[in-house]
Image (cartoon, rainbow, N blue to C red; front, side, top):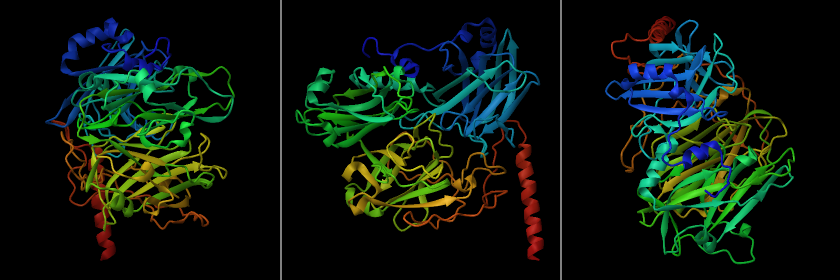
Amino acid sequence: MREGYPFTSLTLSLLVVGRVLAGRIQEDAAYLNWFDGRGEGYTEEVFLPSQHDQEEGVVLHWFIDKADSTIRLAVAAKARGWVGFGLAEAGGMPGADIVYFSLADGKLIDSYATEYSPPIVDECQDWVLLNATTSGGVIVWEAERSLDTGDMQDRIFFDDSALQVAASRVIAAWGDTSTISYHGKSVSRGTVRFHGRAGSDERFFLDVMDKESEGFVDLTLENYSVPLVDTVYFSLCLDYSDLISRGLPDQSLVHIIGYLPLIDSGVGGHLHHFLVHAMEDEIVPGNSCSSHYGDFAYGWAPGAGPIMFPSEVGFPVGKNGYKSFRIVFHFDNPRLESGLRDNSGFRLYYTSQARQHVAGVLRLGDPNTLLKGRLLGNGWSEHQFDCPSSCTQSMFFDDNVTVFGEFFHMHRKGRRFVNRLFREGSDSAVHESFVDFFDFSQAGAYLIQQHPYIIQRADSFKTTCFFQADDKAAFGYGSGDEMCIAYLFYFPRQDVPLDSCGALLPFHRCRAQHSSVILENDRYLSRMFGSKNKMRNYSMPLPSASPSLEATSFPVTSQPSIVEKRIFESTGEPTIWPSPKLDTLTWPSGAPSPRPSLAGEESSSCAKMLVAHFAIFVYFGMLMIC
């Protein structure tokens, strides 16, 4: 990092090697008394600093009992009223599984949120309060829960111990009021790995890079002046000599093994995203690098963190590899603020030990924004992109490729994103990735938390984006426009033109068919999280963590859409669908108990209630048949 570069607090926490962030609470006598008496029962600890004050925040302690598949969690904060913790889908409240302790009534409340509003009390109270300590303005509560309750109003403490699995997004808030209320600046966000080498995801990344890399190179802007225009794209061209001058070894080949975003805090929220393309040829002096497309290598948008490749995967750079980069920065300046200077970019970590496989990126949906100017549709809308099997059939030279990372990108009107993989000859998806509550303000580039999965030759994709917009909103490059793009990081690299299977592409074998439909309301989004009286479908078990990246097909873990897919070409008039009937119960035949009980605990009352409802349903169904 160059002297004087004002990077964000997130990046600073990454870059200060050897430093463990700590807050004032960890020096508080009341907290230390609790820790001396009960802290030994926990094996992992992380401090989540407040976004507004790096020395304020919450401390998380936890222990995972693998035999019972439970987690014991302790949450500590300087507060006199309440303290809450949540597993957040995108990093904010929408789609978050929240639990909070209120000092006034001494209760722990299991809840969830679907928007930025007070949490909704969960129908199934799956957390069990073990202890609460309040002293000297500090609250520490301890509780236990199953890692996977099976409850659709809960999120899973996903097994994130493997390198290629995204860490968990977490939120926390606290206050002095007697009941939970708006937290103001008393809020923390972060990414945490709860399994394996647990702790801060930033610390985890740096530990891996410290062991596996031989050095790093910063590819950043140098005091770039943001123009006085609403939206601007700027290309930073770096040829081989530029890479050498910035610290890349002048040798035949090195492999990139990780990327770390370096975001300048001076531009605030003005940097919308950046994309990185690599070229095997050097940039011709005097020519604009905008004419060079190259191969897609990396990208960043708000909410995205570092990327590390699996141990057998790298991205080749050097005399016998990629020799130049084009970094396209997208800036927003709607208020036409003057004096904005930016030094953002990224840090690449490398090794001279050539790795077995070369990483590639496959982009789905509308990755080249060729639908520019096409209207989304007024209200709720669904846009689907069908990537045909001919793309992988003709462009893949390997029978199997492994996806180790998957990012989704939309803008502010995006509400839900689904990507489904289909095997040739089958109408059922063999893999499904989705984000139920897309929140651009928290994660413009949303990394799916999942295990690696396999794409086979002749497989096809259905990429679906849901929007909520007015009658003027359209696809386009601006922040006020919309996009629908899925980025799949995979290996080994295949020969896919423009790394894309998208709408309106000139090569028909990888041209996705675009279709759209207007929806009457958000019920047609078929969101899974927050569903009432529903339990997770155990007839299709969640994939377990695998220490290797062997060719393995993982099952779909979510329910099919409740909307019949009779979608027409988007060139026609949109259809308006009527309101769907809400399901009152989803209980797979032969499924095990929907909520595994904690040791010594009776089955939850809500599970018993569902059993009773199911029995009544069957009874009256039999009467109707008779």
